[in-house]
Length: 339
Image (cartoon, rainbow, N blue to C red; front, side, top):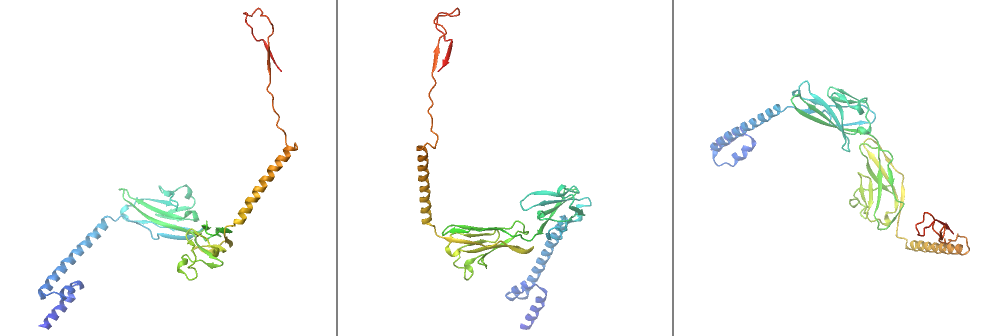
């Protein structure tokens, strides 16, 4: 009895998928259970085939597609480049193709509209089929380009191409304070305006590269700085005397050799209380001397004296003690003079 059972198991093992074997191995119902599971397996397989056929049919029905052969284009500055775009035949022979450009600030404008290049691109860009060709690219062309295709029956599709114009870094602008007070927050900054793709940054202290995460590197566990490789900031939340050193920054990207700024020494020290007190005393002495000088000059008459102005007296005098022909018997003022 054992041999037929083993033979039967081998025959069905070759015919059914692997997940049915687990059920066969532990099934107590014998060959009848095996037959039922084979039938169920065939039914499930037929259902899966139907689902796949339906999915393929749905894909064919909605076959309007727009694609590009290279969605991430990188090219050196001042060289030519093609941005590719293709669309399915479902759009028809009269499909409308337009290209839009969006820079990294979000500003958007047309490159090709109504079959013609727009003003800024008139002498630099041509269209070959549905592809766009730049004669020369500059760093201002960095951004994303959308190829939009529309059919006569309002079908629509688009493909996006990211263009990166490769420009090597220039010597970065570094701002490093020459002095700092213990316990204060200090930020050293570094920026390169030319690098494309945007430059990353490294900082050096006494010609030693500073790791981005000092707590994880032997020899830097006591350092408390924060280094941002993306924006070039080296921050000391509470600067210490041990942070006194020569610092410089290095900008780098994938387009060319890295560039550095010159090293600057940052001195960290305590607050100079004696100097502050001496400064206050000197200021008070200068104020006292200035006041004495003004008093002495005024006493000796070196400064102009302020003169008192007397009020002017106005005297009224009648022209006659008696009224004239035009008098009505009352006294009237006829003239006046000033003394």
